[in-house]
Image (cartoon, rainbow, N blue to C red; front, side):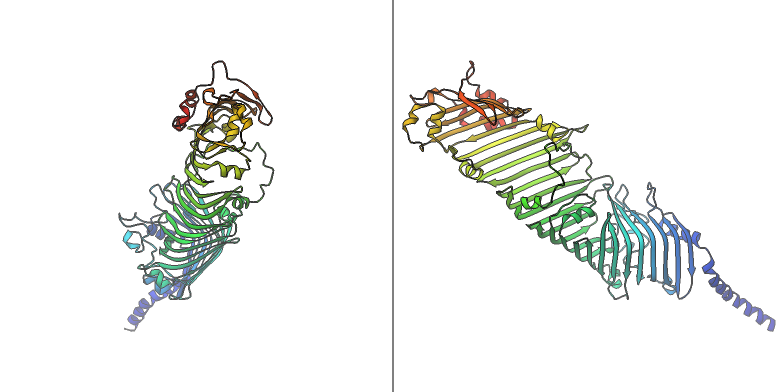
Length: 626
C-alpha cells in the first residue's frame, strides 16, 4: 500500500510537474508557425509570423515579430506588415468573450487598405455579408464575419504606435497615405472616456490628431452611436468633428458637426496632394454625415476670403474600383469680391508674358467627376459690379462644361454656356461657347465705361457664339469661328449723327441736341480665322436709315468699313454720300467712299454666314425689311 501510494502521488504530481515545466520553458519555445496557422485559419487569409513568444502569468505577455497578413486575391503586397508587436493579455479573459489587454505596443506597421472589383474592403474577413446586411454592420456577427466587432471589442487599456503607416487606395486609384510617427490610445477604465493622440502626416502634410472618445462600455453598446470629438491640425489649419459613429471600427456611420478653419488654402491643397499656393482663407461650419462611400456636408455656412458663404453643400461619393470619385457642391455667397479673392494668391513669381498658353484638351482621366453650382447676390470683378449671379460647372473625363452662367449688369441680363471637349484621339480639343444679353442700358454702359457722348440711347440685346479647335488655347483662338448679333428696338439717337452720316446739309441749321426715335438696329459680325465680316449693319430711325458693311483683320489690325444712308429714307437736302473707314485700328482714314458696282451687300447673305444657332436671332429683326 505504501508503494502504491507513492506511485499514485507520482502520477498525480506528474501533470503538475509537466505543466510547471511547460510554463517555465514556454518563453523559450518558438510558436511562430503555430500562431501563423491559427491566425490563417481564423481569418481565412495566409498569415506568416517570424517569431512568437509567450510568457505566462496572471497577465500573459505576447511578443510577435515580422508578421504578415495576406491581401485580397490579385494584390501583390500584403495587407498588413508588423515589425514588432507586444501586449499583455489577462489570462482569465481568454476564457471569456472580451479580452483584457494592457501594455500593448506596435512598431513598424504597414497597413494597406483597398477594395476589390465588387467594392468589398480588404479589411472584411470571412464570407461576404448576406444580402440586406451591410458590411461592417454594428452587430458584426449577423454578417457571418468572424473576428472583431463592437460587441466583443477588447478591454484595451493602452496602446502605443510608432513608425507606422496606413495607406488607402480609393476606387479611382488615388492613394491616400497616413504616416504615424507617434501615437497612443488610453482608456483608464471600462467606464472612463478614451483618449487618442497621433502625430504624423497625411499625404506628406504634417498632421496631428487629438480625440476624446466614448467609454469601452459605450463602444460595445451597438444600439447607440459611439460618441467622439476629433481635432485635426495641419499647420494653422484646424478641423473639428463633434458627433458619433454607428460603425466606429470602420470610421463609418458618422453624424455630427464639422468646423473647419483654414487661414490659407495652401494647407488644404497640401493635404489633398496638390501643389501650389492659395492664400484665401476658408471657414466652414456645417453638418457632416458618412454612410459607406457617401460623404455629405450640408447646411454649412462660413467664409471664403472676405466673401460670406450663406449656404454650402458638399457631396462626395467614392468611386468603385477603377471608377472616378463623384463630387457635387453648392455654394451661395452674399457678396463675392473676385478682385480680393483672386488677388489673394500673391505674386505669380514672374512676368505674365503674352506667350503664355494652356492645353485645350481636358484630362481624359481626371480621377473625379465634379459638378458645382455657385450663386451670389452680388459679384465684384475688375471694378465692375454684377448682381443675381449663378453658374453651373462640370468636370468629366475629357470634358469641361459650364451648362449655365447668368448675371445682371447695368440692368441687362447676361446668360451663357460653354463646353471644352477632348478629341477622340490626339492632344486636340474643341471649344464651343454661346452668350446672350437682353435689356442692357446704353446710357448706363457709356457712363460706366467712360464712352463720353455716345449718340445712341436705349436698351440693346445681343447674342454671340464661338467655335474653336486646336491643341492649345492660343492656337484655337487664332483659327476660331465667332459670330455675334446685336439688336435694338426702341430708344433714340442724336439727329446730328444721322445728318452727319447722310451728309444732310439741313443739319447746319438745326439744334445739335435734337434726337430722333430708333425703330430698329441690327449689327451682324462673323469672324473666321481672325478675319471678320460686318454685314448687315442697319440703323432705322425717324430721320432715315443707315446701312453699312465691311471687313476687319484682327491679325493685321486693319479695318475697311463703308457706311451710307439710304437715299429714299432721308430728307431732300441729304447728299447720301457713302463714308469709308479704312486702315489700321489705331489710325484709320475716314473719307468719302462708295459701294461696289454690285451695290450694297445682300442682307440675307450676311446672316447665312453666321453660326447656325445665331441665325434666328438675326432673322427676327425688323431691320431686314427694307
